[in-house]
Structures are given as C-alpha cells and as structure tokens.
Length: 63
Image (cartoon, rainbow, N blue to C red):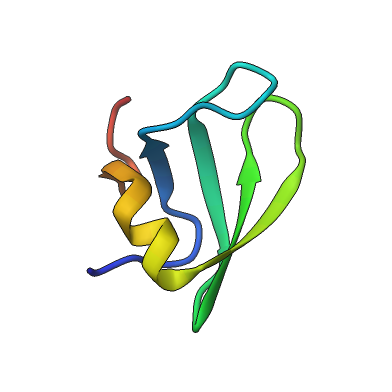
C-alpha cells in the first residue's frame, strides 16, 4: 500500500472521541497516526493499520 507522511486516512473503526480521520506522522514497520479531532497519537503495526484503512486522502484532495 502506498502511504506517505501527512496523508489523511479514513479508518474503518472510529477513535473513542468519535472521529475516524487520522494524519500519518511516521511510516515503517509501525505507523504513528494522529487523531484529527483530539490530537492523540497512536502507534499501530503496519499490518493492522493497512487492514483498517478505508480511504487515503493525499495533499490537496477534498474530503
């Protein structure tokens, strides 16, 4: 899967704050993503993160 830093991800599951949009901060074996609503940062293994992605929004792309 082609994911870059600063991409916005629409995830299948929502965060406990009620939001399901996240920004990618770090990629590698683990992904570090930040919730766009509350700002909480989460580390996820690559496999789990890629399974949970519904859509990827690149820079300049409308939501």
